[in-house]
Image (cartoon, rainbow, N blue to C red):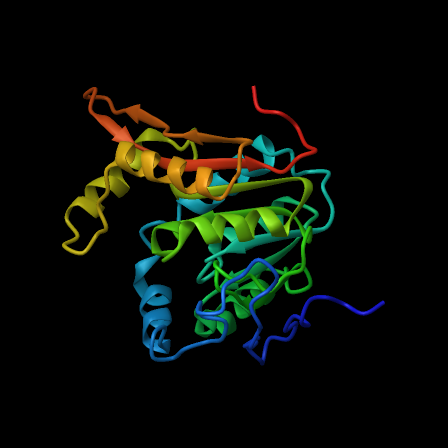
Length: 260
């Protein structure tokens, strides 16, 4: 049977840099091939070197939460981590589930590091990497059981189109978890430490959660996605200071479990 998906790069010595045509439902003017001008190697190296270290404690907790909350333990098939970058969450999800996880990122310069990390953790046969633009995903319809994305959606130029693509790629009964921040049960002291450090960063991308929720609802409505829930978790620290845990969208593709 001929595959509808370009082969994944499965080796450690090569990066999977694919030129893919815009799939059905895509748009001709979106980025469908890697661009060193827009997404240079230096950006990936900077994030690998320091940018994600502050968030290192976030990924194991988020992966554990997702595996439990989305009932991933017994699922088999493909999981996609969209905009995964260095792949910290991808690898944690591969360690906790039976799914084969794909690091789908717009900057392929992350992939050599990601695949080296997979080998060092004994996960080299459990993950793949592929160039992907969220607005023109290089996957056939109904391909993935699960699609997750942490800290990526705010960079999508056309969120409506990206959500349409995510919904297209999900299998019937599949689930997507898209957003930014921490898992709802992330330890509050860890959350406070991270938020305090981020507050001192000049270039940290601040945002209003309520405003973002309204924007996401509009994007999802325009994408004609109806079965979703938006979560804006938060906790208070020992001094009763409110700490934002970010914002998340949980999407189910029918037929699937209906949200309560």
